[in-house]
Image (tube, rainbow, N blue to C red):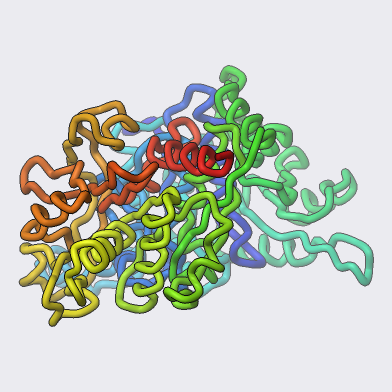
Length: 537
């Protein structure tokens, strides 16, 4: 029997209250006390994973070392804890049903009628406990996606009810995140939505152990007493979560509220050392007290929704703090720029990042942005599709290969400088079939990237189908675009740079997935530094 303790985080009243940030903040506090902690996300949608979801639907798709395409909350978990997540950290209803149906087809249920209870709930319970049974963690925090009362969340809530009963009160607790809205007409905070939310949870057989109240105004003691009385929780377990200037403030705010203390008390883990947040607070001090600033243009095609580039934006925060700079990110829609307008749009910037993406929409604007950065010595950073656009731009405008392109955008291009990977050519299913997860990359001695990493071999996370076409490598290198990172097994070019340019780097992988508070990604740190040097010239 595992000694792992389980914490379940549910949400009520409204979505987007920040369950992931609360879960990550509590995990940070427990980790800072010496516990081995991980967080998992249970998502109630029927997609097997978010890999086939449009970024406008779901924000970015985060990728783990072992190749899982997951919810963006796993990015928060890793950025806060500096501990890698895996396939086991994100489970969707689609994956649950897929597994149960496969078992039924194999005859594992011996002719029984397969039902939500017990078969689906048993599968959910197994998935929840995989991490705990591994022996790697003292505490597993499980965030239940959606809002209590949603039809699609009911099997998860029922599984939590069963598991909490099976594990016992000392080994499992439920934190309910809810909203206490302020009605400006009445001039007061209202507790009724929270009361109804807790009542809905209790109707499902679960009593909240801790209530975390999202609010724009401070909860006074009378309000806390009222919530404790009507929601059946202890007064010390009514935790205020007021709006913060940055998500990185939340662990300290939860520390002040005693969320970690009441959690450990309920799990019978008293006597733990005080949390050591010195490294975290050093980062916060640098983040909040910059000595300068840089303006970076993020050229993308999903810029209306910032969550589409969540890991990139957070990587800039980490890199900014490391450089003691504030990074102002300006969102530029690649569909809205062309060769005639690009100078007006980007000439005031200190650097350009051309973002990842799929499909042909907006790619010509990205190519125009790359050309401007290259010709005007503006620091450039291309990620995934951004790197591919840099290769296309150079092929067209330096090599003179007219209509050079990627076969993703133009299958009939006469110069496919970016082409579908060989192993992808027979694949018909879209879900989970890209080149995913962590892959090795060897760096060329003396290159920009080798100096930035200060390593000869790195591991980075990938998510792509198309690649640099090696048939054009000799032409590109002769013309000045150096290939400086290679997969050691396949020879696949992973990194390009222009040695003649102050800072021009394109990478096929996604460095933003590995940037954390404790370890800002070196490429982002170097890019921000180059942008600042450009700004003070």
